[in-house]
Image 1 (spheres, rainbow, N blue to C red):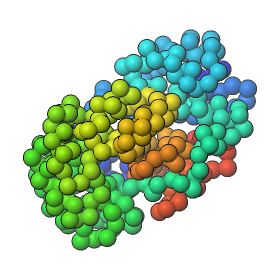
Image 2: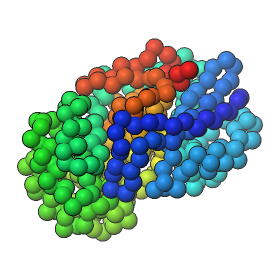
Image 3: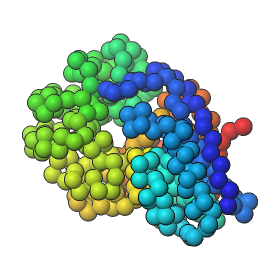
Image 4: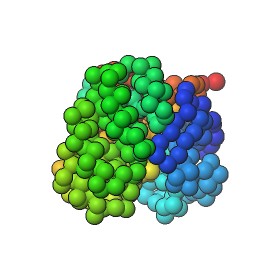
Length: 337
C-alpha cells in the first residue's frame, strides 16, 4: 500500500463570496492510495472557517500513515474506524482518505461505487447551480451565463430580498437560498413569506450554527422548509436537527467522508428528514464521489467543479437532469496530466 498526497490550486471562474468568506482560488488536497497496480483518489478542500489547511491535513494523514500501512483493515468502514481518533479534529483529511479507500476498494471488487452500493444512477436529483454573493447586477449576469433548472443563491447581505426579486426577473427556474448563518430568527421568519412567493424551494442554514433554540421557532413559523448545513457536521448532529430543520445538508468533507455520510443519510431518513449532500468548490475528484451516492438523496449540491475555470481532473459530467459517469470502476475520477 502506497499513500501520496498532493496540494493543488483550483482557480474559479468568478470570485466566490458567501456570508463569511470570499475567494478566487481554492486550495485542495488530493489523496492517492495505490496497491496491486490499482489506485484510489480522494479530495478535500481547505477551509479557513473550520481552520483546515493543506499543512494540517498533511500532518494528520502522516500521523495516520503507520496505521494505514499496517493493513489491519479490509473495508473503507474499518479503515475509517481506525482513524476516528487521529482525525477527530480534522475530518477533512479523513474525508480525502476515505474517498480514496472507497475508490480503491470498489475497483478491487470490479464495480463502480454506485453498483457496489446497489444504487440506481438514473435516480439522481438534479444539482443546483450556485450564485455567490456579488452586486445585484453581477449576480444576475452570473445567472444568465449558466442556464440551469435550479439555482442556489447565496445570501447574507443587507439587500437579500432585493437580490432574489431581481434574479427572479431573469428566470423561471427553481430557487434555493443559503444564508450561511447570517440571519436572525425574525429575519428568517419574515423573509420566508416573500421568498415563498418568489419561487424559493427551501432556506438553508438561516441562523448561527449553535442557535438551535432559535431554529425551533423558525421551524415552526417559516413559510418554507429549512435545511441544516453548518448545524449538521457530524453523525451526532443529525438527531439534534430533528424538530429544528426539515432536512440536513451533509458535506462529505465536514463529516469525514463517504463512510459516515452514508450513516448520516440513513439516520436522517429514519427521523423523517429530507437528505441532501453538498460540496465545496472541489475538482471532479470530490464531485464524482458525491455523484455515486446521490441516488440516496432528495436534493444534491454538486456543482463545485462547474464553478472552476480549470478542473485538474476528469470524472462525472453534469448536465441539467443528467449525470454521465466515466467508464472506469470505483469512483472513476482521474487527475489530468
